[in-house]
Length: 410
Image 1 (cartoon, rainbow, N blue to C red):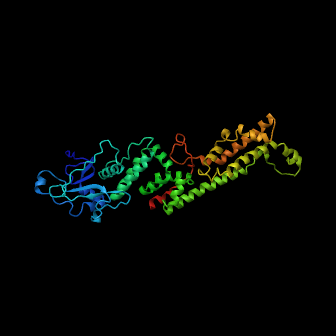
Image 2: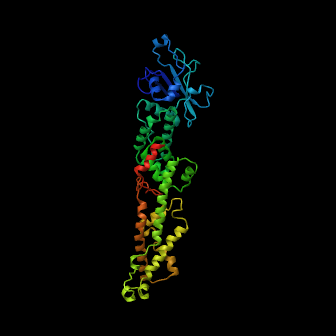
Image 3: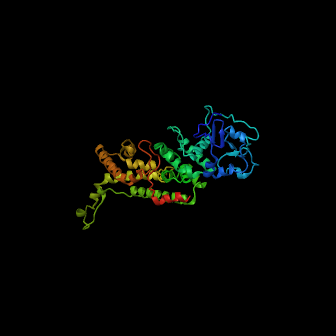
């Protein structure tokens, strides 16, 4: 092995040799490891690290302990007090009995499982990250590109799992959050794609910022198969599920109210105000109402269109909770009920060219007014830049500081 450089990952005065694989080896300090990690206190206890002989000391040998990453299936008959306690990993650090010469008592050599350009095991990389964090090194989850959104969450989960295994979660939660936040829109896109897993992870590291972001996207995707699976399989604690149900209900009731407003809207031009009850004074005679026939026909066609979408479950019952429908209403104009779309109507109710112009103007006026019923749902309360990365679900849920208290109780 090369001469230690007296800095992480190898210190000349280090007394613990940690081997993750042939390419990832560390010579660190038992005192520091014991101080920060309950698991290390167990692994570096007992008689696994005997006193070095005077001969070894004269040679400058300092290593008394050796830990190797092994499958958890190995060494099941060993003292359980020396095993790490994580339940989410298939590997663990296991102590190797050493002799007074600073060598393994069983004569084993250095592992030859070098990386040499091969794809790095993400758990090995996570161990490197956590060990570095114990020495105050910045936590880096990698240089992610636009095609590696999934890697961001999986690497963060792996680092958290290793930290939990070693009992040092408190040391890596803030650095993980800081590193994730440094990726900006890449992080927010990843959360938008998979809000459920990010919601769970945010609770693990107690990140209010990530929790808030994930919660908003989770509510917008509440009807999707992925979110329903996580809800029904109890991925979320009762307080979190109660919060999600509350926010979902607010959004759902708001959407239903908006649809009711669309179906019950009457243009101002059709209104009458009764004063004396005389047809010529109050414009309530048959002649007055017949003058508004094109406005009534336009209103009927508009309601017919909205009712068809409701009947086809394209609104709040749909997988997207009616996002596509509401977005269409909010945009208005040529987004729906365009001139070519009205030809079927004209086939049933032919009218002159001038009549069509009047009829279509009334349609446009109704569409323009109804935009106001939908625009509040197009507000984006997340950090995702939806102009650059358009969303296909609602991102309008309001999350108050009071709602975020659930993060600190998990």
